[in-house]
Amino acid sequence: MENPSSSSTIEKLQQDCYNEWMSLQAKRMTELKQALSNDEKEDDKLRDLIRTVIGEFKDYAAKRCEHSRRYSSNYFAPTWNTCLENSLLWIGGCRPSSFIRLVYAMCGSQTELRLNTFLRTNNIDDLSTVLHGETRGGIDGGGESMSDLTAEQLYKINELHLKTVEEENKLTIRSASLQEDTADMPIAVTAFYKEVIGEADVAVERALDKHEKDMAGLLAEADKLRLTTLTTIVDILTPVQAADFLLAGKKLHMSIHAWGRLREQSRLEASGGGNSGGEVAGE
Image 1 (cartoon, rainbow, N blue to C red):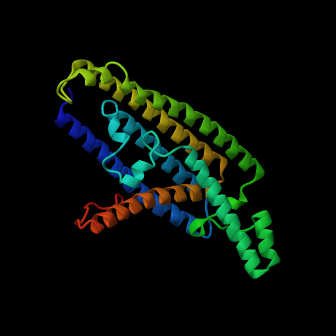
Image 2 (cartoon, one colour):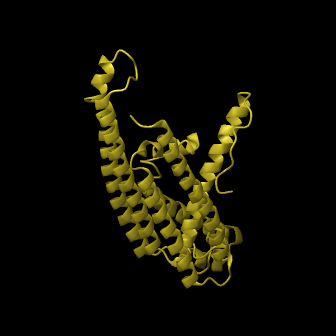
Image 3 (cartoon, rainbow, N blue to C red):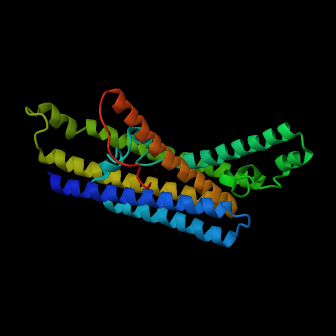
């Protein structure tokens, strides 16, 4: 049977790791915005910043793998997350395919922005911008717009999307199988015959330890797919587009966290409760 003190220590390590990651998110978000706001964007400097961001994600995934070896279940419904964030989790994080959906969303919104500019000004130069991507229009004034994606880039992203969804489905099936195992021997049968609910049982503890270990392996594979997908997208995009994409992803992550806090605070106040406590991590 697991030691409650040991479990608490591991959970604190996991939460500290997450808080450190969120602080890095906020820091890199500022650096990306600054790099993209410069009139003269230096591709070499952007590449260095992009490599740093990807490297930090790789390090974070490695730490999660290390901390999840015995207590992996903490990552599937983290206490340090908001309820909103936990409702969006897929195997301890975001779906890798959501990275690609973000590219599509940015591409669509920025193309629409350019079209609206043309229709508003009725300027043929603006139409040239829409058709040929001759100006820069990323978020926060950043680099080449995602509407400048070439046919080759779009083809590669679509191929990546199909491959990523296929890999996601394989992991989802494995996750479902592991969940179904809890209704099998010895867990379900032991629960039925025990007179005292929750009474310690050696066979059950062994089965649950194995379940935690299997889920830890699944988490590591899901993180590997997230990293592979992110890295491949960045390789397909230009340095400016990649920085724009990474900035959008970080802003989305931080925003979902903050919105979840606000929603929980609003519900607590509506029910007559006090301050829910805590700050938005990384701010």
